[in-house]
Image (cartoon, rainbow, N blue to C red):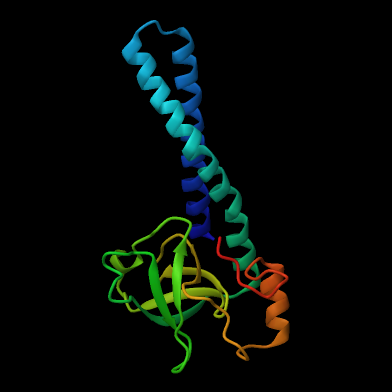
Length: 182
């Protein structure tokens, strides 16, 4: 829960600071007579107009992380990073069984888990359904990071029907049976 609290704080800071920057720029634009300051304020307003909805969505989506953490226990697994991971920090594979090690994509923002300082870079905490994604955190502490299957998702015949109902309830899978990608 300490990691989740760090996630909430980080996303709240982003949301509040983006809103304050945009509001401040609007006020300065309304009262300034300097063209350079007006252009700078206009740039900040346009940037905030793009970033604010994204940060608001990621703040709102933190509830899905909490739902997953309440529904699924943390389990430790071995993990690895595909060869393209150094240039693409959004990919990680988790070995659930010898014959099942899906690759997950980290969302909504890339987090270089491969570079996170920890004593066990080949181990990961995972909470969720291996077919549809969940939440990961490096062993040793980090805020929880949402992951979804990188390619397709959902291993046919793997798992139990009651697992599908739980995954649907916490938002890992849609009613159609397709895993969520956001």
